[in-house]
Image (cartoon, rainbow, N blue to C red; front, side, top):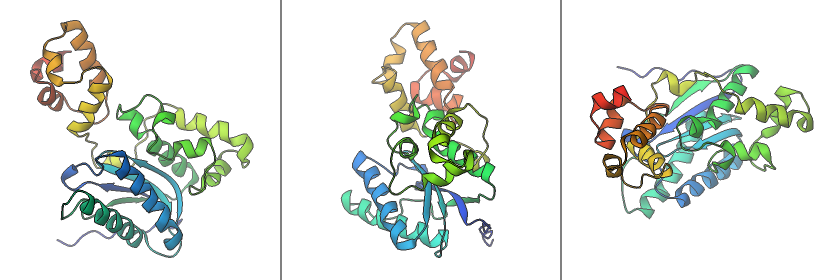
Length: 252
């Protein structure tokens, strides 16, 4: 069956998701994340695209960009090929790292642009990786809070009040608001990988999942209630990771 053609954006702006092949991790260390950010900076100059936002998760990446000449397909190919070549050499591996076909959606209105930008920056928050977007260093959120030399923050500021000085506070307030935003990732069904759940458990003081079998039941149940709120997690997944029966997890 022929692939469905990628929808062309009249505005030139796209929300992109690059996902690890078979949902595997794309990053093993902070050095890898730094390398990827350096790569999108490098090709921004070569491809002449505008970068409005990004967020690096363990097994997928969000980008909000505007093409200016080269198509998003060529841009993504340049970025992914460069990073995969470096990654494979570093870890002495070969083969694909990303899914062959990245996901994209056209961003045609100012309102939806702001919605996507908020959705991207809230990704680690909704995944339960952090409780404060400002503390998550692998997204462009902090660039909107301070100075930025490679993310076009002024465009988003102009959509709020038309003046960067006055609109900064309003934009950051907007990006912090609770919401039910439905963007590209929601439409393809959200999933969170086991490693992300295990990392979140560590932040809750559970360094080894077997500890959940030994602690007091009420404390265990409180931890289960917390991780059940993580966006994209399933009851079956929690049971598999923790060893707690699915029926018990379901009742907590």
